[in-house]
Image (cartoon, rainbow, N blue to C red; front, side, top):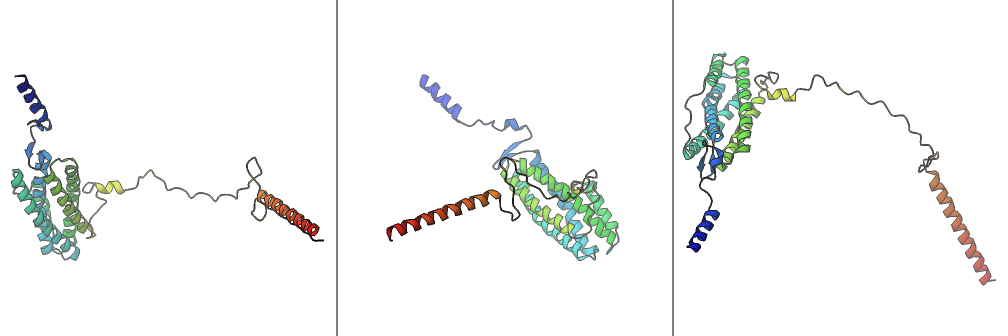
Length: 258
């Protein structure tokens, strides 16, 4: 009986507890890729929402803009979200996450704004570039937060792909030259790059006067040629020693060979 109790105790201590992830909260579920929580589900749903309005916006750019750079940005949006949509649907099915099917109210409002702008006008190009660049900036920060904190390897890999796509879209949108970085309400990251109004430009330093080295303890005054007096004295002493040595050898030679 004692041996049986010891064996049960060893099994209980050595086996991993089934409730190991209970400390993460009731909103987490275990998956083959690690715990899946609210942030992972929110990520899949937000990327889906982004595709529901950014894809149509990209197609609108091809149809309504006369600016080749805006059209190029539209192509990147269409291709990027077509790829993300496939990845999102597959991962959501694997992780049992329900995805939205319609853009939200704000996104639909941005599409309506683009639709109302005249075709082949600068107004359309500005609305297109600024609305999409502002949205991508917000999404990129959200992706980075989820990518940093998730323990789910599938969500981590998916977030990395999304970040690459969003960064590509931000780059081509900025390349249109239509993004107003002074609009810090729409693009708050621009506020970080602005110089502080209280910072005054530093005045140039006045030229330094020539430094006169006086003879103090541990310092030697330099002569006109730029050679320290100490070195001159050592050289003189060495020359004197060599002269005495040569003179002594000369006298010795005369004594040996009269």
